[in-house]
Amino acid sequence: MIGRLTGQLAEKNPPEILVDCHGVGYEVLVPMSTFYNLPGLGEKISLFTHFIVREDAQLLYGFGSTAERGAFRQLIKITGVGPRMALSVLSGMSVADLAQAITLQETGRIVKVPGIGKKTAERLLLELKGKLGADIGAHVSVSSEAQLDILQALVALGYSDRDAALALKALPPDVGVSEGIKLALKALGK
Image 1: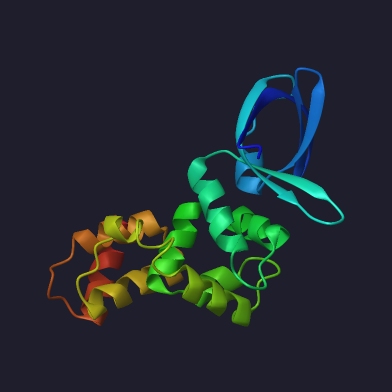
Image 2: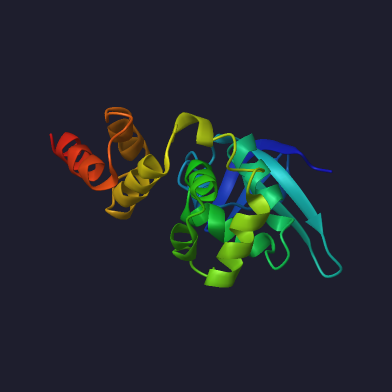
């Protein structure tokens, strides 16, 4: 019903903001990723929204990008994942990180989000496989099990997905796991 909201930012009280649209103030719940990118009070803001009507409430969720809103909509379709939990997931990790975790089926990264247990994380990975992770998998080309293991090891060691993917690209295609990790760490150490 309400797809986008444009107005002045009137209040910031995480995770809720108030957007003044020509004299009407809309309370909008936003993930922390959107909250951190908000302009100052009184400045113009435009958010993509998702409107939920329940028996006891009408809630408006706002997002800085259509990708974030799309991920939110995919998350709330999962049994046991409500809007609050979906907001928590998007506050705990970016859409790209979530898609990467889904592509690589990494339960450990999703369990780090507050309020997400192992069973919920597994259900999330299972139900979102091919829906959210497929588009991001293209930028990290993993051609073998060894390369996937190397990538997962680098991420587990604390390197960002981007750095790990760049290090992976520099490796010979037929490298073994242990040798690949050593070469990647050497390259990342420079």
